Length: 79
Image (cartoon, rainbow, N blue to C red):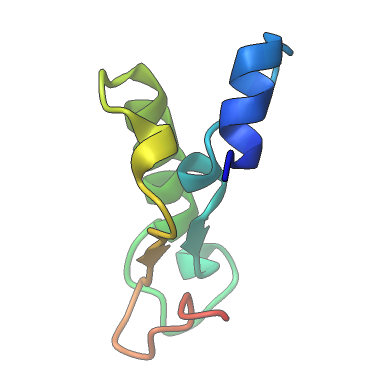
């Protein structure tokens, strides 16, 4: 079965990204959380950018998700 990213890639529609890049989830971090100890949103953005610039075959990552939490509460573990 062809996934959405592969179909978009085959149709050469600009602006689409692999599913993995859109599945990077982060908590709000120190921007709005009193418990946050890092800039989780900034880390998520950096991870997305790194993935897009990599030579990895992101469309073959399957159901892989990346969750970034700024403290031990693990708020980025959304379903």
